[in-house]
Amino acid sequence: MNDTLPLLVDTDFPAIRRDTLQTLQVNLGYRCNQQCLHCHVDASPRRREIMDEKTVQSVIDFMLRQSVATLDLTGGAPEMNPHFRHLVSTARQHGVHVIDRCNLTIVVEPGYDWLVDFLAQQQVEVIASMPCYLQDNVDAQRGKGVYDKSIRGLQRLNQAGFGRDPALPLNLVYNPQGLNLPPAQAALEADYKRELKQRFDIDFNRLFTLANMPIKRFGSALLSRGEFDDYMQLLKSSHQADNVASVMCRTLISVDWQGYVYDCDFNQMLGLPAANRKRHLNDIMHTDIRGEPIVVMDHCYGCTAGQGSSCGGALT
Image (cartoon, rainbow, N blue to C red; front, side, top):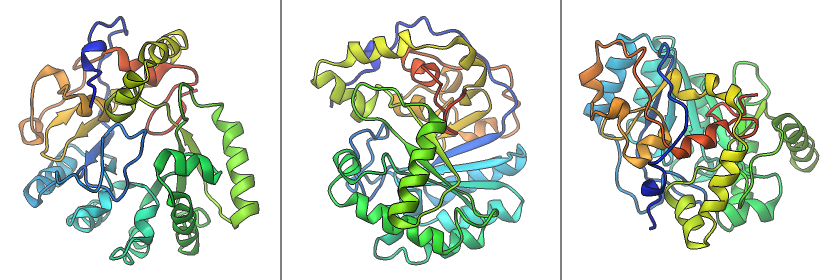
């Protein structure tokens, strides 16, 4: 795979610092039942990296010690981690809001019949990947047959109350294809709601539009097609300075499957530790990290281009 990191180091992205920590985003492992073209994690069924029980306990200890408001679980497919249920239920017992970043197809995989009922019982917010409401676009980006499984997954979530019960939020995530930024989030959300309701009687709460990052699998594809420079030019020329104040890394830390700390999920995938120092959650268990400088490189323009992009969708 072509490495884009050397092309991102020389940057003029503005310096930013941390604010109060609100969200602990935890990558429970790179194992996934899918292998998507846009995946910046390079997750796949072949990956074996997965968070062990000891590290999960460090996550719990840090979450409680630092009074974290939101636990954001990602992967890979986070549900494939054998300690997923223990981590979720412990967080919910202590009043922590939990987000499960679900790829939808895991819902209908053999051996995961328990998943939807468990998420509903724990009142977990589900943020689900759905890069388009049309079959051809989804299958082109995520693999043949993924669209049908995703629809079945959404229907199963709806049946359990997700997207219909106010206590069970269901939000979808859109990623564009090719050299494009996401379109206006509100207008696209209206299209999604209309089409999914008319075609399949599917309901959901919000649509989050996320730009693709020029790293890992997507970045490598850009390099192989000779499109990397064009994409970076698009990101930089679309930079909106007002978005810098709202980027997710100000109030979030990202934790990898071994328990090491990064400013965001993208820096994690690039091997760029927070504060340029390799630190484990155990090393900062009692540390107030407000004011620390955030490691920035050229890929950060992906979060500030156009309407902005974060784990919670558009910034403006």
